[in-house]
Image (cartoon, rainbow, N blue to C red; front, side, top):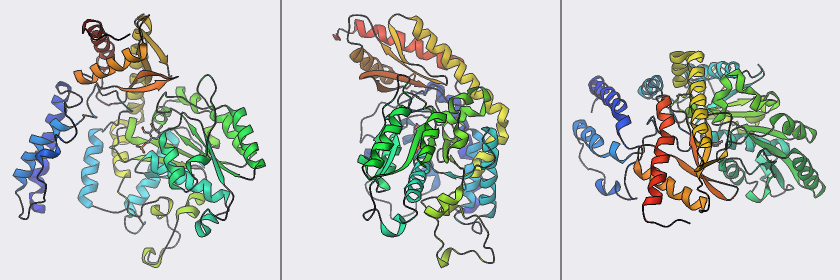
Length: 475
Ligand code: PLP
């Protein structure tokens, strides 16, 4: 394939995408496959000779879509959906066409400056104070890793970068057990170690217990450890829980801890002022992450990290060897100096396209609709005596169980989840709430309608009734 063939094949790809979306609703959300089924169809070795793009494209169409879990399916309610707006696809195409690297200002002036401007736009859109700047990252995990590296170095007065951690007392990081495993991964990678991530107990509402936090910090100080930072969640992954950000940050400040707020999924709802109560106090955080690639329509790989004082992350991660010096410009933002990887994609382009294509009002409407529909769905489960709702949430999330009195609700729920996902009309994932399985429902796809959301109850009810009839005994 040559560059001159791009126009024709882009048109074919565009038509393919249009027809994919037009027929997506008819496909099962998840394919019926076992591991290895797909790989069997791909030759074990790369071809020596070039192949025609017609052949490659035909193989893609024949093999790939049928072996995919369709994240953009309007009835995908598993994990947290990761919506892709058409405007984002287009922007990604253009960014890919330029194939640029936004590592330095001079390697991508528009990429860098648009990113800075997008952070300003989103900060204002979320109602955050003007002191926040930041950057786009590939994911919340990368943003959290950068925040944890920064809290580590700040606590060590930036000596860890030179000395490593061995000469220093143990560092301690605090978070509730409701936080995502990316926090665990970050403390491991940062050399702080899993055993120094203190899982602070939670209160009845699953928010971090701030009294227990204070006691844990005091005990650690007393035993010679260095309390370095606190990670808080707004919309935890398993149960959607939210910490009391205001109280927790005020405890962190008493002990001079660096604070990072993980609002990877729920943060998008903060576009709507009526939900901002759930992160009340966030203005005092040092770092905040919100994924634009979950609920805001930017394709995967677009996470917004806001920083109250970016100089701390710059000091932690910034290196400027001779070969990365910019000609004739010194006072310049080089975005790689605030993140782990040097090479960076042009992430801002898709956010720019999406925010303009929908407007903040369009994005708010989308979020509000989905929250309203999910609340309606939850009320159907609440009204049905065969189900219980162990997790409720103010946003587009809840969890239910199949709980027929006198039978083991954990086993019934596991079996129902299996049947729902084998059925293919929708896709839901399970979690464990207080030791018993529960099925999560998380909405967020741009194309999902009220009927798609409400269909979850109809499907669950229909399949729950088949459990009784299947002859398998579940007590
Ligand atoms: N934090 C929370 C609360 C999440 O729900 C997730 C993923 O679902 C992550 C972090 C990790 O996000 P990413 O895949 O962008 O690294």
